[in-house]
Length: 139
Image 1 (tube, rainbow, N blue to C red):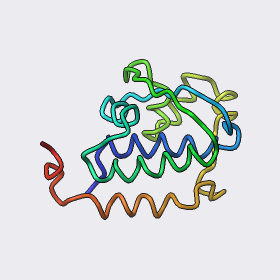
Image 2 (image 1 turned 180 degrees about the horizontal axis):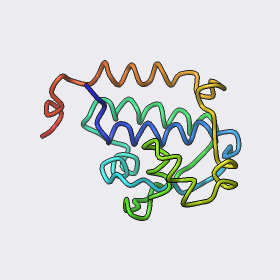
Image 3 (image 1 turned 30 degrees about the vertical axis):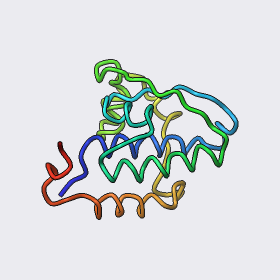
């Protein structure tokens, strides 16, 4: 059993906010997401999928606690190439695209620093909510 892409995309957006929350405190920023379902859910604040409902609650609590406002925009996967490489374990290809020096400047060691202490809990919760057959949420 795996989490579907719309759930992992939403988790990635929340991780980005969490990793940058202190720097974004009190700010408004634009986030670019290449999954239209997630863009729609984040813009409208409503979801049918119970996983996205819970992720919306987590996201809003995080935004509220740091006074952050977000403008969520869609970006095509072709235009989101560098972010997709990083999210799909394509570090070597990413380094080729941007150069080693820039790649080293953008590297974040999430596992070692325990920067998101509740990440494991969040992922486990999403798995608990994931049915054996994904199509149970479709329709």
